[in-house]
Image 1: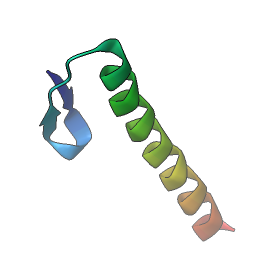
Image 2 (image 1 turned 30 degrees about the vertical axis):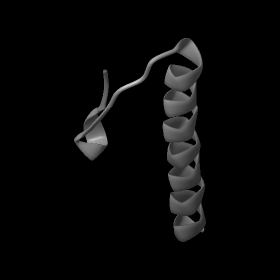
Image 3 (image 1 turned 90 degrees about the horizontal axis):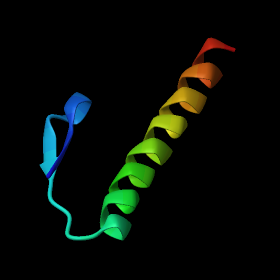
Length: 42
């Protein structure tokens, strides 16, 4: 079980590949938010 704290979400996984997919998806969303906030500042 992995918990994404800022979203108050828990997600289970059964393999390293599933865990990596969860981590990668969360990281991609975080990167999109960074880009979006930079555009708003400019």
